[in-house]
Image 1: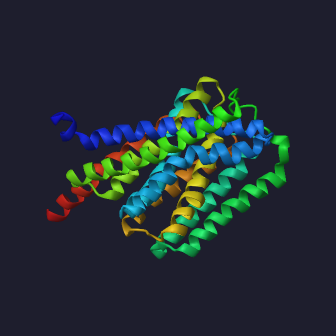
Image 2: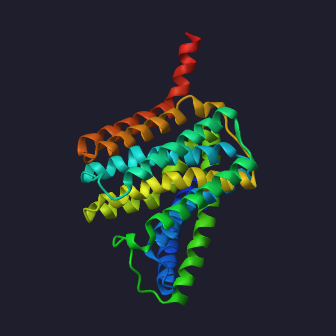
Image 3: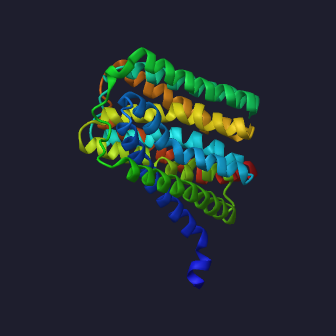
Length: 324
């Protein structure tokens, strides 16, 4: 019992990560089964249920962190997740198997991702995301999804989407269980991670940019590993682009619409510039039309490792330089 009490925050973090991972998986499985039973086109499943399901951890963590008075965790969660999606997850995927960039409409998706990333930087310069801006962002996401459906229609049904043999009632139970696991997991992760961060003198922003960002990106990482094993890495690329778009417009939009978000100036020093640089780099790779090879994947991973090291050691190093 003494061991549990002394390590309660670490247990909360581990339990929270497991809850997010298992809850996201259960939600996606159940939602796909319900959608299939209702004859909903697979395009809609992919754009809404799969995209929303893999980003649900980020949404719940952001809402929980704002309610608990740590908005830096909400901003850091989205910015860190978008950086991790490109540098860590795509880097890992490319290292396993080169990622094709010739998938249909992938260029459109990456240009939209680049545009919304630039929009977030512009909002960061203003210092806050107001409720009005949040509503506009959420509305832009809905308009984007509607436009995709009108342009593509049911003809782009994706065979790579998961199939389900669950009955509708069992699927509903999966959805309820998944949502419960996500809500509990998000609460545990935010509580445990912020407590650990404060014990070690680490800022809320850094813990959101690292541990929570990677933890809430577990669904995307799962998609990357599975698609790499099946040699369908273009699925991971589409999932990452969609997730980055959804993180900014959906996660921050919904969160700001409910609770206006203040963006700390520290995010403009390294984190947002790196997010834009990663988005620009990925855009150039996709526009070039050649696969993202293992060497590029290794470079992505090295840049992410350097970034993580900077988050942990950089501020202390700057203090030493100032004193000297």
